[in-house]
Image (cartoon, rainbow, N blue to C red):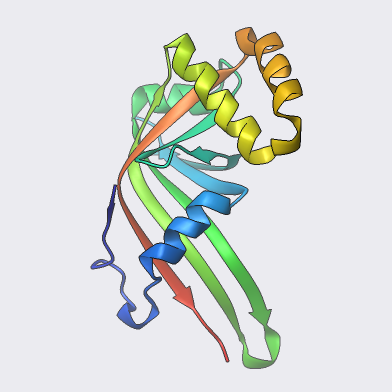
Length: 161
């Protein structure tokens, strides 16, 4: 995964790569944006976990709109918003955001699916990892895992004093 900010219009608002990685690591959700074969867009907020390298995992039902769209067009974008603070008296908003671009696919390997579920439990329910492992195994047959492999990401922010 390569951090590239050259396409960010406001070069004075570039987010530091270390902060972008911190947001990717700690954010609770992001917006997955897709387009079907006709170009019809669809965006949906999802919990996710980063593998620490170049992909995110999300869990979902084993059928549905996301999976249909990804089967038609694997190209996706994922937007994560960090700190946000509305500044009404200044008519602006302080913010941080990270946008990633890549390809999505359904994980077929049971081993990788279990690892993705383990990572999700570890991120969102760290105090319940043992119980989470049991829950994951019990519901394993009705859960699909999407792997979103990213090649490029960028970050932008606006700090207001």
